[in-house]
Length: 191
Image (cartoon, rainbow, N blue to C red; front, side, top):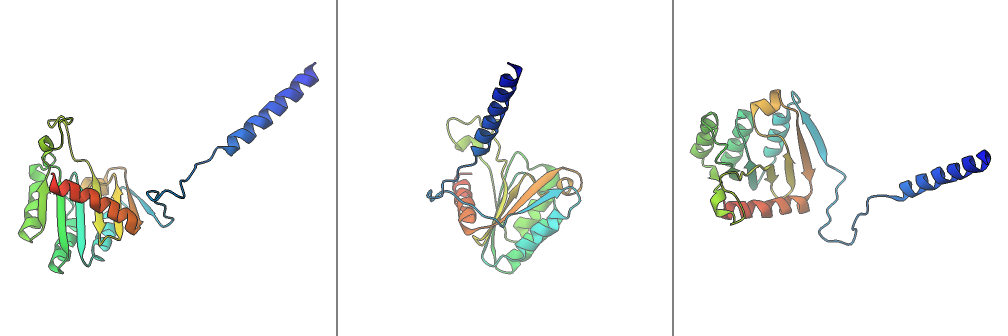
């Protein structure tokens, strides 16, 4: 009886392991909305010079840079945006108004003084379903020339660079960049 039980138990374990191995992620290969890329760069902070990496991508820009950012105090990134603007790149920055504290004002003033368009949120106009007192624009992304998207938890702050545990994804994919740019346009038209 014990032999039969052990044998049946062994068969059950084998069947369970086989059925578990059959479970896999199903990719909708025929879905035109499905986007896949193998060339994503992943970075983590603190102290990994992510601001230098972001700035190097900004330096590649030839036509457009769209930035949606919650918190912005990093002068390395703001200087790169200003240099890009001076090269003739169309640079727009969409920010969270509630996040615009006095410590951020100098960065935004400098960006605007150098001709960069900045627009803040107006959550009360988003929709009837939004509690405008609590609603925030919490995105953190950049699109560059419709070719690159930089996104993740990383705010453009010295704290994100030096202290916080943050992440950044750099995605060189035109379809993904266009998707982010489309969303940026929605934000820009309805801040």
